[in-house]
Length: 137
Image 1 (cartoon, rainbow, N blue to C red):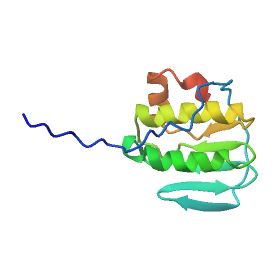
Image 2: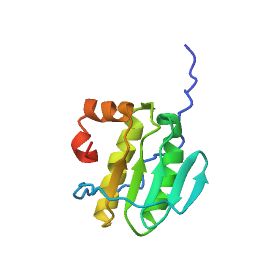
Image 3: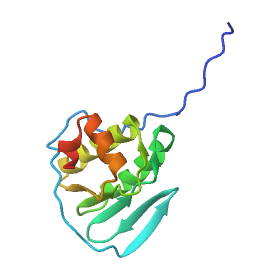
């Protein structure tokens, strides 16, 4: 066996931005019509009075850094946030962990977060990990 080190999948901690403290993570359901859409890498952010992010079909570890960047931009804006999960076919624990921490951080800042139109796959993944109550699905 050689002494070669395996190259890590990521060169940074995608959850570094999360404080150690957690706040109440209750989501509020509200509706708003989108006004404009911005793309950050492959992640869509719809801007309006309630900012919306549209999750991709596959939200896995290889996309966590892109998703994190988009979520951080939403935290910098005022207003409540919607996460559209209608297109999700595959989501892993890393992406769900990022969403959980995002929910906690947003609520701590006074921003309500809502999952809208969750796909069957998204709903099943949250049920399996015990996150249905947090995401109000």
